[in-house]
Amino acid sequence: MKQSKLLRWAVFLTPLVLFSLLMNAGPVLKRPMGSDDRFMAFLEETEQAALVEDWSAAADAWQRTDRAMTLVIRRIQLMAERNVAQEIVQDLAQLQGAIQAQDQSEALMQIAVLKALFEELGQ
Amino acid sequence: MSEGFVVAVRAVISFTSLLVFANVLGKQQVGQLTFFDFITAISIGNLAGALTADFDSRAWPHFVGLGLWALMALGAQWIALKSRWWARLLGGEPTILIQNGHILEQNMRASRYRYDDLLMQLRERGVFDLAEVEFAVLETNGQLSVLKRSQYQPVTPHDLGMPTQYKGLGTMLIHDGTVLKRDLAEVNLSESWLNAELDKRGIRSPEEVSLAILSTTGSLFVDRYEDHVQPASIDDELKVH
Image 1 (tube, chains in turn orange, cyan):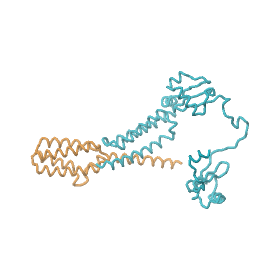
Image 2 (cartoon, rainbow over the protein chains, first blue to last red):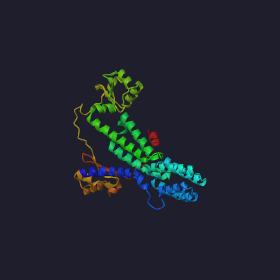
Image 3 (cartoon, rainbow over the protein chains, first blue to last red):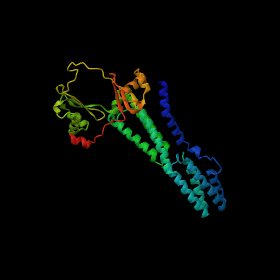
Image 4 (cartoon, rainbow over the protein chains, first blue to last red):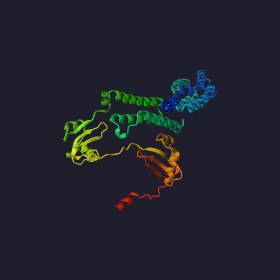
């Protein structure tokens, strides 16, 4: 009787615990797990290139940042807010525009916004 | 972001959580719910809906909200078991609407209960004449309990001094073609006895049986899948009568 009660509670609690872990896995799954998904590192590279106005290097770094974001969003889509993910995608597009226009202040501003949004994503 | 996939996973989380919370919260029927229970159920359902389909916020806050509502409802239920004051606060109190055959207008007004409501609920209880009612009590779940005057109450075997047999609850022995061995053992009977009983009815295997129940008087009710009865429609029934 006692064993069946324990089993009943285990059946109830196991899915709740698993769901809690899944829903809070955002900060862990956001971390780089390979060489292509280092979003923050690539964003830093873009920032460094923008600071010295090396627009070709900035465009290359942006490509890697954009690819990394696609991988990260795919991984944490269950834990992330849609509007934050959409804002990141939009800001990445604006950053691309700023790099193409060789507009340093706009590029740096977008990078700062992207850093803040990435911090918020899935937290 | 694949919204279909996210909705699917969130729906599984929401559904499973609701299943767990509903099981923990108890076995009250919808008809037994107080107004507070009703609001709680709606709020929990609303949170489960948001957990499934509100993409602009994370699933976790909704899940926490859902869990807290369920936990608070459970806590409120538990305190209500211990404290009568709390139980009254939570579910209200029954209100007497008819006392000794007199309608208590003040209580009717306080309960925002109309005469039409009273007459309707009396009719639902099989009372079409107010003169038959001794007491009518509006319960906390909105149901009306009616005590008829003694001269209008049905005669029972007890009134007539007639002896009656113990009825009790039957024991299910076969469900959906499967012999319930544990229940069979509880009534100290064996599968060979059951097979012999089925054999007497021309049934070769328990798999032919949809339901078998043993009554406390020892009679076995058996329903087979093959009924050999032509189902009649309601229209046919109406034509006959």
